Amino acid sequence: MTGPSTLITNIGELATVDPARGTEGVLRDAAVVMEGERISWLGPAAGAPDADARFDAEGRAVLPGWVDSHTHLVFAGDRTAEFEARMAGQDYAAGGIAVTVAATRGASDYDLTRLLLGRAAEAVAGGTTYLETKTGYGLSIEQEARSARIASTVADQVTYLGAHLVPAGMDADEYTDLVCGGMLAAVRPYVQWADVFCERGAFTEAQSRRVLAACRDAGLGLRVHGNQLGEGPGVRLAVEFGAASVDHVNYLNDDDVDALAGTWSGWDTRGGTGQRGTVATCLPACDLSTRQPLAPGRRLLDAGVEVALASNCNPGTSYTSSMNYCVATAVLQMGLSVQEAVRAATYGGALALGRHVGPDEDGLRAVGSIAVGHRADLHLLNAPSATHLAYRPGMPMTAAVWRAGERAV
Ligand SMILES: N=CN[C@@H](CCC(=O)O)C(=O)O
Ligand SMILES: [Zn+2]
Image (cartoon, rainbow, N blue to C red):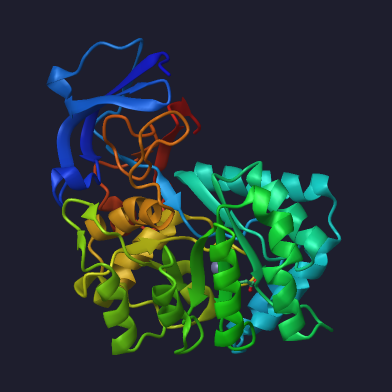
């Protein structure tokens, strides 16, 4: 599909995050042409072709739109009281999820959709152009199917997280049967991925294994919430099942890091080719809000693991979809360079969602990097370089956003 073309010129720093351009991938004094939903040209501004419309970036930086590969946006209510108690010293516990389940079950389809649309709009306003979201606040066949259906009308990709918490009054193994049986069948038309919260207070290793096997057999891609509140089997299970990502990863021992690194042994990080492994998705906004140690992103990168950064926007542990904030935190507190953090929040998220490459055909274009044929998802900063995301944290850095070639902000 073609369409009207737009030339964005006078770009001071164009962070392509394209592995084909080597680890740097940064062009100076650059321009990009979008044609319909796709990128049709990029290169030096001086050599840019004509286009139907022209936008002057005035020397500012352009990045790929953020790819937020981990959110929980289908919910009603909030958990301010729980947050206040946590800031007063109480530990986070999985049980708080039940408060959101009650509020979500009580909301109408109309309200749940309206709330989700508002949150997705907030994410786009912050530079996010590709969004995953999950079920997990329904926890019955009807409610999980409703959440999945509503999510699929708004998010780019949807993950089934029936295995988020065992609902009050239910036996854990009987609930796991439901997650692997009738509930899975009911959500299946709406979701691409399945996830399990493998943690104390949520699902045990044996229960998690059953969920992952059933969902894999149903043809879903897999991800795992693991090692968030302490060391545990989450990472090992993710590796064993060939999951696309394991998310949180706060408490890792050497074996966990080695196991994750092993999944990337056939991968060429510089070129972005080869056999892909399990992405470690770090969620720094969640770590700060729950006062957990920040995930060891530096250690994972040094070991050769591909890392993603995501917001984990949800009412319990991370009530923000600001990827700018996640990137700033990764640089200021996790030891990532600006380039590594930007890559993790764009290309890394795309890797975790299987969209780092695409056939680059309609509806299946690659996201998370700027290259010809990829989806035209661009983020113009109010700054001359991406460094300003960390150098000026908390400042309004998002100047304009194009999503699939359309101006969204
Ligand atoms: N860790 C599990 N699930 C969410 C939190 C859910 C909640 O507390 O409502 C998370 O990713 O942090
Ligand atoms: Zn989560």
